[in-house]
Length: 257
Image (cartoon, rainbow, N blue to C red; front, top):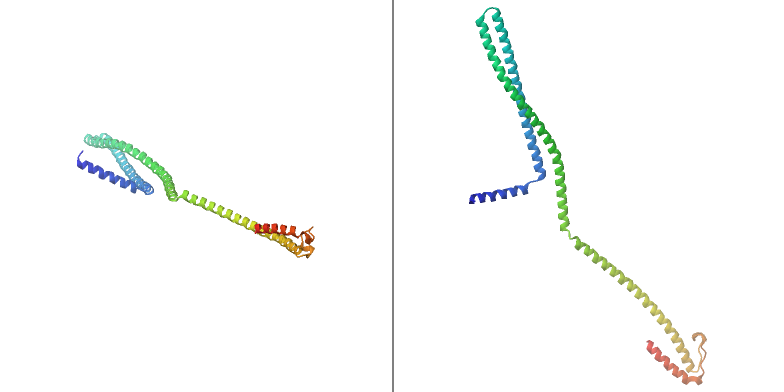
């Protein structure tokens, strides 16, 4: 293979690729319909011209036939009048017209066949054009649908759906964690409040009991309303036992603090 052939093939392949990539199906289909319509117009003109030519030949044939008949009648008239020379000339004219009629008849038959073929071709082209128009609309609709689907796929491919869904899941988990933390804080706050009141209540009982013990050690009495239920005044003679108990209570209080 020569260098020129190789270069020519490369150039043609690149041109074909460029043309293929530049082809717009909708525009190409519209242009194809326009080309077919132009061909149809030319075909109709050709059929019309062939029919007109056929009619002219038919007229010429009819005229030649009429002339042949006329000269036949004149030849008979000349023979009736006894003019043989005139009858002979009339027969020569008749022969010429008859030969012309035969030639025109052959031409007329040939043209009739051609016209019929042109008419069939015209009908076929009209049918193809109608079919092409229907198919064009269908193909354009399919091309539009394919283009829309391609745009949708491109848009979808550009969207990082998995990453977006992962972000939603992370945020949902974070919100759940925040809600759990809030609930735990509320429960802790309530528990701390309860423990504070329990401590205050326990501390009040200890203070009352301590005051009663101090009063007993001092040899006095305290209001029975300030002592715990069932408690009475402790005698002085039992001070040593009270002191021991007091020390034990102080130790317990220190441990509570």
